Length: 139
Image (tube, rainbow, N blue to C red; front, top):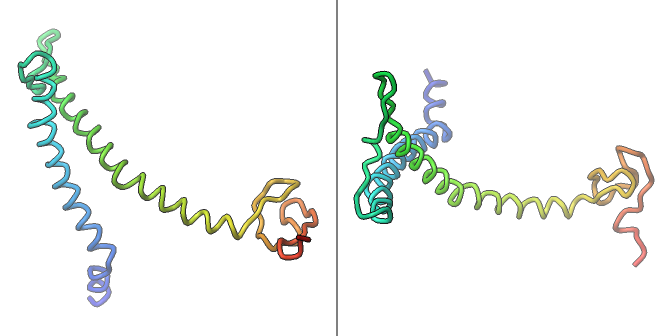
């Protein structure tokens, strides 16, 4: 029982639960954005008539294909993807690149095989060429 309690109280499970709840709420928010703001905006641009994409459909041999609902979901997906990219992916990429710069200072490229090696290495591990460490180079 104590192992189960530790599992539940571990930070990862709580963070995951919060992420699921926030994600579901965010999805509802974006769906409302598409339905209440973007769709009427498209209607205003295309002639003042507010389109209801959910009603768009066509019939083939008695089967009705409701492509309008798909358009609503596609717009929602694109909005969510854009927001996630600009608020999560782009900042994380920028942050990771800052950490990579400090890592790059600790390594250098072998002049022979172009593999990454420690800056103070005297011999390349890949091609075994002898190298002069940065601290021993003449200035």
